[in-house]
Every structure is written in structure tokens, then in C-alpha cells.
Length: 546
Image (tube, rainbow, N blue to C red; front, side, top):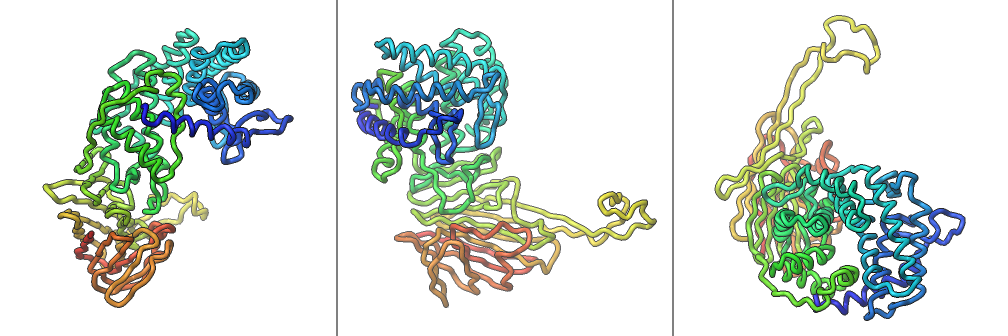
């Protein structure tokens, strides 16, 4: 994309001094010459990724590091580091967690590095380094054949690496490996959701792998899966430009606090490829939006110079800019999520999550939880959402009972060895919590009902963005992160800048809140507003945004 080429070159240039300042310098260590990451570790993936970025800088005529000898020495050092650290069977180590693992992420990046060398190498030294990278790819390929995967997305990275290395080395076993993984079928549902449901992190990994596989194996049918997931990301965009990640099955779900935010910066190269290879104007618009906002707000600009070096046409690519749908409604019963977004307002209702309701108005965020101190089992976490017209219904039940004394003397006095299934039981109890949600304009109505055991302490909590101003009929406080309040009555106002939420009416019948047994710990990032009661509960709460 021509519009951002100069900025991408500049960002790549800024990387080089950083790499030089973070090399593993202990000459007596096998990690010598590796790139030291934020954990102080010299990882194969991070190091070989730097080799790709260094190769782009070295061969880019528009870079101040063009043909810089020091940059070539970095690449040589990274190659030596790899051969010093590779395992006997070609696998490697991800030092933060996985050992004897196939170099799936590395394989793609090294393939890009090799192709840059093949395309631009002129001198004898450059050609010799290119040959070393070829040998490195052969070893990486052996590791792929001798390794396995641990998560769903690893399969597609292994397959994509195998396909790349096959096309370079001609090792047909690698092509067969890629095809065996593809024979398992792409784990994406009818709504475009991958198994791991990770819009903040691993969806991008999967999308990249599918792009690689589509090109390397000439399988255009994979673009259908790519498009489904890439279009889905539009449905996860919040009014403030962040990605809604709270339905994720991976670590981008974070602490579920309103202070956390994932921006789509890492997706720039995905949508750039979508514009370039799939000729989709909406993807071009999103790539433009990502980069413009990244530059405007001073976020880290993605270093994708390698992509421009591999594909000549990108440097002069000026795509048709389409329109992205910004107001939408989405309901996916498979992933148990409903979202509605318009203007600067969004509502998200999700199942399988203690934080079942998210409301956002501009920069002000709020999420809701329900819990009862019922045998430490009643943190409201419904499995599914039922949509009936404009009403969303969620229900959660918990049951427990008590054991009685054995009728006959047990054969042992060791509690752990006793057969407790032989005991009688008594006083069985059940509690059901139901929430019905209706959205009208920029207001959300929540009907909360409980059935079953009475007298159980109950709380509804609303966690708003830390630093908000909080006030009610008889109080006015600053919403300090990690703290909370239990208002007695009336509407509670949360204000952040120009954005306001009215939540209520409040109710208070006890102060058993942050330490309620079985409940999720109080938020450390947000400010918590507690409403308390005893079962059975029959309450209506409204969140009014303005």
C-alpha cells in the first residue's frame, strides 16, 4: 500500500538499533548472538523473526541500512544462534513454555527471509548467507516432521511452514504433512469463528497461516474461510476502535476489566493482503483505518517491510477504498454471544462467562456480574443465550446437599479412602438465577429473578472504567481503580469525560460483597458498584447511556 510505505520503512529502520542493543552477549552460552526478548530470553522465534526484518532493511534501497555490513553480521549471528540451539531432531524450544517443539512460526518467517535473499542477493557473501538460510530451512523442515501441535492454531502454522519449505526445498514429505492437517478441515463455524475465538491474538495467526497456505499450495478455496473470519472482526470492533475480546477462549480475554484494550494494529498486514490478493475494498479501508489511527494515537506502527520486499506490487499499490459497516447487530448462538453497535454505543451479552453483560458509551465501559453465596457455586455463568424477539434470556442453576452418617461402620477411618457414595443425603437445595436483557436505544434493561432456596445473600455488581466520577443522591466519589461502593437507593451516575451511564435503581440489604465466597475477585482495574439483596430476588435494573 503506497500510502504507508515510507512510514513502514522508517519503523523498520528504528528496529535495527533496538536489535543491536538486545543481543545475547555471553560468548560461553549457546544463546550467544540471539535476540534477547522482554523476558531476557533468546527465543528461536523472536531471533529468526529479527533476521527477516534485518533482511528487509539490508536489501531495501530506500532504507538507511541498505547494504549495511553491520546488519548482515546480525543475520549471520542469528543463523549461528539457530544451529547452536536446534535440537537433534530438528525441533526447538519456546523457552517460556514448550520444548522440543516444531518451529512452526519460525518456518514462515525464515521462508520469507530466504526469498528476500534469493530476490536481491548479488555479492558472494550475500549468496553464501542465502545458502546458510536454505540449510536452516532444511533443518526446520525436519523439525516439523518430527514435531507435533498443542493448540488448534499451531496446526495451521505447522502446515503453512511446511508448505513454504516444501516449495523451497522440494521435500514432498512437508507437502504431505500440510495436506494431512488440511484434511482435518478448517475449524471455523458458520459465523466465521475459529475454535479458539481469539480476535485479539490468535485469529490473526490463523488468518496469516491460511493466506500462506492458499498461496503456497494454490488452494483458492481457503480464501472462503479467510473471508469469513476477516469479516467477523468488523463485528467485534468497538466504537472507540478497540476489539471486543471478552468472548475469547485464549489469553486476550485478559482479566475482563474495562481498562484492558486490544487495538487491531497487528491485523494491518492481514487486511493489506486481503486488499491486495482478494481485491476487497472493505479490507483496504480497514487497513487504512488501522494505520491512520495507529499513527494518529502514537501506537507502535507494524513493521511489515518484509511483505513489501517479497511482493513488489505492494510498494505502488493504491487500492479502491471501500466502506466498513459500523452499525450492526450480531447473534451467534454457537459461540454464545450477542452484540449490538451503533454510533458510540455498544452492548455485548456473552455466555460461559462470569462477566455476562458489557455496555460501552464512548470511552466509558461497564460490565455486569451476578452472584449468590449458595454453597460457593452460584457465580452467574450461563452456558447459552436465548434470543426471543428483542429479549435475550440467560439462566444458571446450582445444586448441593448434605451427607449423613454411615448406617454401618466404614472399613477405614481415613476420610479420603471412605466410600462416600454409601452415605445417605439430606436437605437438597437448588438455586436458579435468570437474567432477561432488552436494549432500547442507548439503554439496557436487565430483569433479574431467582428461584429456589431463600435467604441467600445476593449481589449484582457493575464494574465501570477506573477513574470515572461516581455520584448518587447522597454521595459523590472518585471511582478509584480497585475500589467500590454499595449505594442504598436511587440511580448511580458514572461519568468519564463527556460520556455518562445511569445505573439503577440501587438496593442494599447487606454488605457481603467483595469477599462473597465463590464469587469472582473484585476488579483491580475498574471501580465496582454493588447492589445487594437476599433471595428470592425480583429486581429490574436499567443502564441509561448519554
